[in-house]
Length: 406
Ligand SMILES: *Cc1c(COP(=O)(O)O)cnc(C)c1O
Image 1 (cartoon, rainbow, N blue to C red):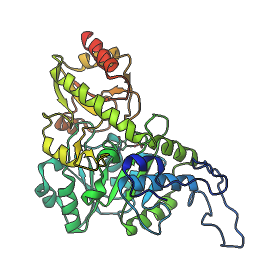
Image 2: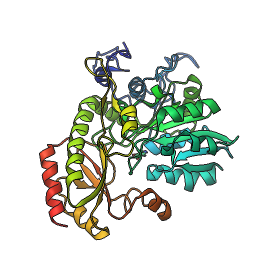
Image 3: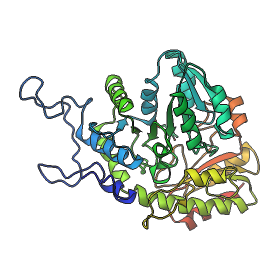
Image 4: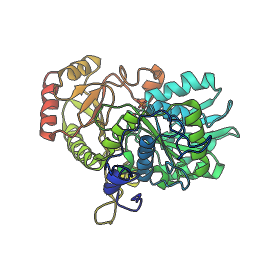
């Protein structure tokens, strides 16, 4: 019973997991053993050594494969793989490339992804990297492709400017040229957006964010529907050793059980707060994919929606839980505002049950070169809000009190 045909609200709870065959335990046990007994040399039950095979990690990997709509037959994880962090997942995906290969990446990326690409793999792996604003459509992407282009990497919505990439268009260009397409789906989660369904080859996640959901575990994931890529990624995961521990696999699996409920509340709260912020005199600009004012509103509706509604009809658009605002003022006003919030914590990261706020230029995106930050609009008056699942009234009151103090 893999529940792959069930609705996503059911899959978050059941997919990839069966009661333990020996004890009947409903939750997959945390399987800590590093090694497994063999009857005779080479004769084992599918488990040799825990870096290579682990039942708790497999359960998580099958769960996320089902959520992203992957099912690689003959693979114990069905196309999912769990890593020690989102960056470890990203780094392992890059190992699919060879020295001298060309990678085209969205110009607005998670700061750590930008750092890994530009400051590590360009040097250690000899990758050639082009950063491209892919919001302008497929023509610019076509023109950037060379004989050496082997991978296209996108994030959508992007971090922190919440720009969107046309997933269908990018996947079509990549497929036409035989280029591996990768989408970091951390912000939208499979509840709202499933890149494989748009034709992408690989989905990457920081499980630290919405999938874990409780700000108590660091992890990363990849999901693919292509057996060749899954086989290669599994080989790389085992070779590099960047696996998620059994206990952390259990924590992410536990978090995923409430993903559907949490995402609904994240989206409802964020929608209401974004609408409120847009009217606020101390805010000069709000970006949120659920607002009619989002510059790519139509694309937002095509990319992001509740995929499995209870009645099975239509698509209900959803904006996610992240909001970016530009305050009326500069660094001083931002500092005062960020020091004044009480319920909302000033902290990096996102996607947990609690609301967080941060200053990308000083915090999460400090590693992006200043001129690139300016081009992207990561200015001193920009703040990024990860809307949690608290009472929206309490969140609005906290924001209003903080605005009063600047
Ligand atoms: C946090 C994050 C990452 C990196 O994940 P870690 O788990 O922190 O290593 C990658 N991409 C996005 C979009 C993120 O938000």
